[in-house]
Length: 340
Image (cartoon, rainbow, N blue to C red):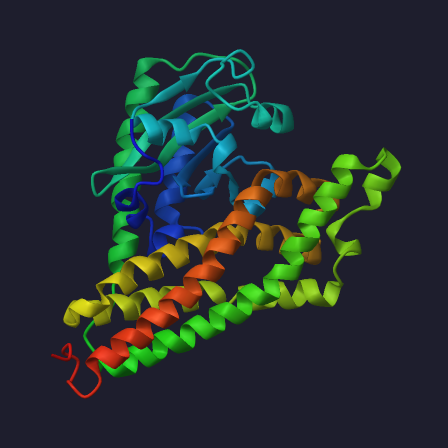
């Protein structure tokens, strides 16, 4: 049984693997999975620390297609990763292994998922879901396992494609790392009131009479201008985090004292990716893609995980900046080599 929070497993979840933009090859794999199983829904999940990210998907309800995530705690795919083996659920209502939240919210009744393995670790699942109880025959499972190999190869290729090239001056890269942490810190501060508003609205809805709960939406607890500012700030966060990871990797390649920066930077990037579902839902409301009812269903699935990830990301930013300052001090005046 695998540890879902194993640092070695989490370290494989990085870079372009965590992005949500469409990828033609991954999209083709999930479409083929849906056809193979004759199922209405299929997706590739990446099981991170707090959130299950949906890296490619087919047939999802709109709010899930916007957020591209559910919390890890209510996901079926966490069991695939934990056990590093296929999971078959014929009737989710009667299966004690799985959370009933997706059953109650979206009517999911049947599930078949197989591990997606990168670097020897199960990082997620390729799965198909149905809204009626059913069996998944062995040829379907075997076909999913073959497709999961293609998915893993594509995810690995996306990460390798974006690997940093060459080696610039170490001190220059460390300065850029510090600058990136300050940008990310400001972005996280801008997101804090929006996340707090969503949390407050959820608490009010949970305890208020139905009429009052209907009007206790995040838009009543934070200004639209604040919401737009947070979303706008977030649009630049992903690329900044990726650049930070690349800079840290390049520094560590020539400066052993900086090896800890790479793990810290990748951990931060994963945390930011786990906050992103809430931001995408807010963006969907602002753009009119989602109404409040649909957005609220999506928020219910990702709120707890996003809160935990936001807190962890704020701490990580400070730790990375402090680490970069220590490495700068250790390497200053030595041409990039550690000072004796």
